[in-house]
Every structure is written in structure tokens, then in C-alpha cells.
Image (cartoon, rainbow, N blue to C red):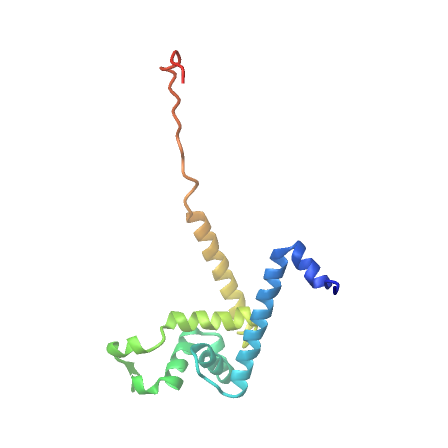
Length: 157
């Protein structure tokens, strides 16, 4: 019978470490796939489209509004009339929030197409301030009141 490797033994002892390792591997696989898509200009999904714009337009790395405009102008020109997008067409286009979250994943999780340092510092400060507000606004533990009545102390239960 073959001996178990050190990694297998570690996984048996610490399932959380194994879960972290698998997550790290999955992130790296997604990162490599995204880099391949950018290198071959493959834009099958929104993540690849956002990465394409971040790669070709460095100003989009610093501004979510600029990024959203460039994604729409580059990949959805049929829905743009001059510099207008009609309300009925907004249902067919990716939302700005979705583009922003995709950019955040690409920059924060995959470490690609980073913004300028001052923009990254601003975003971190804004994120930390928002987290503090959310924690401060979180309701406390529920209060439970238990009332014990001794009026039946002569009865046997």
C-alpha cells in the first residue's frame, strides 16, 4: 500500500487548510484563463470584456465610470446612439454595478491591471470606512426575558 503524501496527511488533520488550498488553486486557474483570454482577445463573457478594456485603456483602471463607458462603447456600440443609451436598451446591457464588481474581482482577487497607488489607497480607505459603518449599524444580540413564578411552589411536578 503506498504511503500518503505530506499534503494528504495535512488535509486529513486540517480540512480548513485543504479548503484554502483548493480555493487558491481555483483562483489561480481563473487568473490564468483570464490572462489567456486577454492575450488572444477572447471576449466571450463580461469578465473577459472588462479585462480587455482594463488592459487596453489604463485610464479605466482608476475610474468605474470610465470603465463602464468604455465597455459599452467597445462591446455594445449597437445600443449607443451618439452619446445616448435608450432606457429600453438598458435591459440588454450589463449594469454599471456588475462591471464595477467584475473590475474589483480582477484587480483585488487576481491582482491584474492595478490602478494607480493613490486610487488603490482611496478605495481601501472607502471600503474600510464602509465596513466600520456596517458593523456599527449592526443590531445587537436579541434580548430574551425569562420570568420565573413561584406561585405553584406547593404543587409537585
